[in-house]
Amino acid sequence: MSTYRCTTAQAIVRYLSNQFTEIDGQEVPLFPGVFGIFGHGNVTCMGEALESVQDVLPTWRGQNEQSMGFAAVGYAKANLRRQIMVVTASIGPGTTNLLTAAGVAHVSRLPFLMLCGDAFARRHPDPVMQQVEHFNDPTQSVNDAFKAVTRYWDRITWPDQIVSSLPQAVATMLDPAECGPAFLGLCQDVQEMAWDFPEAFFQRRVHHIPRPRPDNYRLQQAVELLQAAKHPLIISGGGVRYSQAEQALEKFAKERGIPVVETIAGKGAFTHDNPVHMGPIGILGSTSANALAANADVIIAVGTRLMDFVTGSWTVFSPEAQFISINAARFDAHKHFAIPLVCDAREGIDELNNALGEYKVDAGWMRHGREMFSKWNQLIEEKQQRTEIYENVPSYAQVVGVVNACAANEDYVISAAGGLPGELVKGWKVKNPGTFDCEFGFSCMGYEISAGWGVAMMEQDRDVFVMIGDGTYMMMNSDVYSTVLSGHKMILLVCDNGGYAVINRLQNAKGGASFNNLLKDCRVKEPFHVDFVAHAQSMGALARKVGNLNELESAIDWAKSNDRTTVICIDTHPHQWTPGDAWWDVGVPEVSARESVRDARNQHEQDRKKQRIGI
Image 1 (cartoon, rainbow, N blue to C red):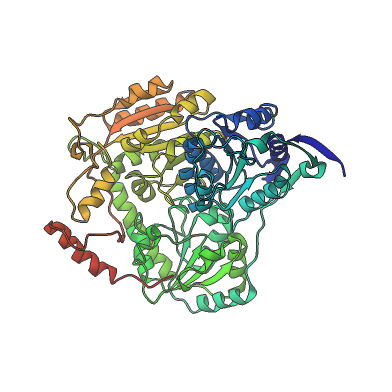
Image 2: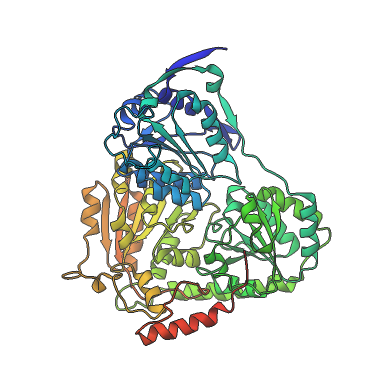
């Protein structure tokens, strides 16, 4: 057997450099790049290995490990999980900074590979700097924390272990059912060790994502249930996008006369004006989609994990409604007593459609959906009109309307937390499929700017719009600097409403007093606003503050003409929101000295009676 002698770190890098995938008929690297911050746990060995292949496997230096992970997740999502970014970090805090990013990827079923330093396998110098010791278990390190937020986890304590571990990590990240982040803890002394690796380990490999078909028995069950349905409804989730099943789903919906509503992750599979599209469903949903869900007798859930923001904490559906679930993941497919079609979304839709025979829903059901959606669109247009300004400050809806109108068809928009996800999911009219990213599985503040960097790295002919509030900007903004350093432009819209306004809204809605959310309600000497323009300019970005919606429109034109990241700031109203929300089950105190809380609790108990029993 032919062998190649190299260190463990060098072997990992050589292996990654020889993995490829096929996108649109072209073979491209499966691992197009690495985000890295070096410390003593990865600089001397992993850093040395990466430096030698930087023309093949480029390394980008971020400002924070967490934000590098976000960038990797944003890249994977925009690329429909077909390419995987790598993140390397040192031991201790460098690695634990990645936990939140791993949580985002795990929840949203998105791949990225973490290569993180670990304590010494031989333990000769223990404890090393930044090592967390466990007195009753010397094998533990902070890396064990990643077991809760990864799909694949391993600690490499001997060089030859990577020969089996790395292919398993890749297989997990490319499996539609198991897809998520993978973690390898690399003991520092093992990184340096040389071993005679088999040459076969480094062979060029081209990976293809599998497309499993549904079970015939389950398929027949789904056909029989659907053929008896009079008011079926399709929920289009993120899995539709990752499977590239948009055309198959559109064909199915049109031929069978079934309206389609979308989840937050699924938004962008269809253009806004597609005749089968009826808007977003759930807590961030439209009145049209939620009304259809309330009257639907069969729900076809495609590529969605049916989280509470989609289901209105299980209140948006009729108690008698039955579910068919098309999902690559068995765990998701079996939720809520659904008939589970455990399969690829595109293949499952096609086979269900082919098996349905002459079945077609009465045209009145689709017509009813279009009428409801038309009313919803009228509401959105009213909310986005520039004529009514609240207390001389525009609303989120108005800002979204201006940005949406100025964005080109191919431009990409990103949000994740605060008030903007609701306003964007409700009010952003998708002009081109695959151009919308609202990370709401983890709804992670700080994801947005870093994800914008990751998406901009794809270097496509489009602008990347990142829309955030002032609270998110303050939480994580360092990748404004990363985009300037690397030359990957984005347009950042900062809507300043004086703090965490949407959480203040929830606080008030459940009877609580405004407290510790808006800056004016916090324990501060005097509320004041950060000069976001000066801050962005200090990191090398171009920046401008605008005072009204007309100035915003002009600033967007200016930003699109610039050659680098541009930040636009605008004050927005903290109490104006687009309606349409479904009910949300959050904890309301059972006892309280506040009458408003007691009233909210009584109402909450009544609303909980509307919930379906599910699993």
